[in-house]
Image (cartoon, rainbow, N blue to C red; front, side):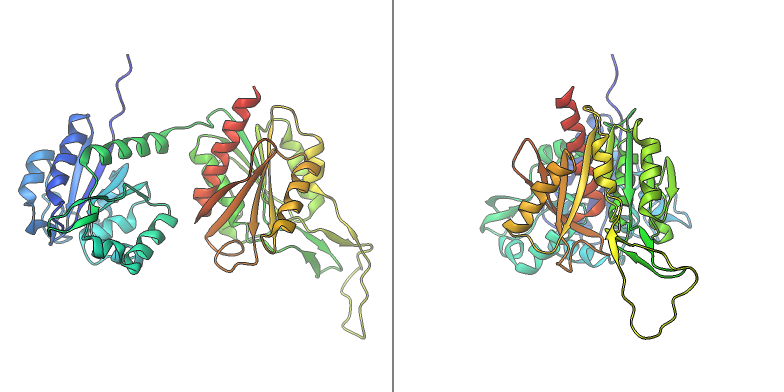
Amino acid sequence: MHSAPSYKIILGVTGGIAAYKACELARNFIKAGHEVRVVMTAHAEQFVGALTFHSLTGYPVLRSLAQGTSDLSATSHIDLARWGDLFVIAPATANFLAKARAGMADDALLTELLAFQGPVLLAPAMNTRMWDAPVTRENFSVLLERGYHSVDPVEGLLACGEEGAGKMAEPAQIFARAITLLQDSTAKPLAGKTVLITSGPTRNYIDSIRFISNRSSGRMGHAVATAASALGAKVIFVSGPVEERFQKSPTGKSIAVETGDQMLAAALDAFDEADFVVATAAVADFAPHEVSEGKIRREGTLDLQLRASTDVLAELGRRKRSNQVFVGFAAEVGESEVEFKKAREKLEKKNLDLLAFNNVSRKDIGFDVEQNEILLFSKIAEPVPLAKAKKEVLAREILLRANELQGKMS
């Protein structure tokens, strides 16, 4: 019989009356065999003493970056961030949400959180009027968009005597959500599988120094590579010319190309071993009939005769095996039924299983930004909206849905 895995939990406690419930939450983690380290704000200590958490967990409480822990080091501001598997903030007050949204680091809790790179779970707790305040909801929404998770407050009788939403969820509910997050973050559902990704733009040259291209930063393709690696897949990453930070996959094989023909050749070399093909690349649609040698001089006018260039997506689609899942992307200017019709046609013509539609006319998503919002089309179901979030979050969701779809094929 295999024993349940043991996780490392960072429990952040802020200054609200619900802080006493954090004691029960810590006890739940410890009973389940997990290790807990607590970080408290100064306001939290007005409700529960640090000695209580020290007694429960067996470890000193981090209360500030200058005192409160017996193993203080020169890197105490990031020690727990390096150590933990999950960061739980319970309770998360309105003040904390505002500071976290702004990226502040003026106490030990906020500093460790800023340095932490794993899943974060928020358990908000506050007066109903504070919870309903537009600025609080906006702060909370932004944190969720950044990839944070939450157990939303519930309705009930509050400490102030008022009744309404704002009461922290029960420790058992927070514990259950935390364990689910940990299992999801450590699971490797794509282990043993290969993901082929095309990313970035391609170029078709007019002369020796000028070219035609499509706009693409390579952020989305790099996000897919990062998510695929985290999910346990072998990654083959084919990228057009982008910034160096988006040029290579965190793991696996990275291939740099420039033209659409080069991208197609590299993708075809790896195509047969791929279980999933995710084509995020913005391949240049047109190429000059002829490429001029040297440099065309800036004199008079320049008339370019263009032809349709190699359709990489269509060429790969023709070769798709029945057990491969092929994911394409559609960047459209607008999101009316006209654009949706084009997306459905692309899904069929290119032999795609999934198509991620995004409206690049919006400034807050799409090109050159960290977030996107996607409508995921498939041949077997109605389009599924994926809410605005970091591209890494959306990439993970797309890959998990692709994996689920492949399971139905077998």
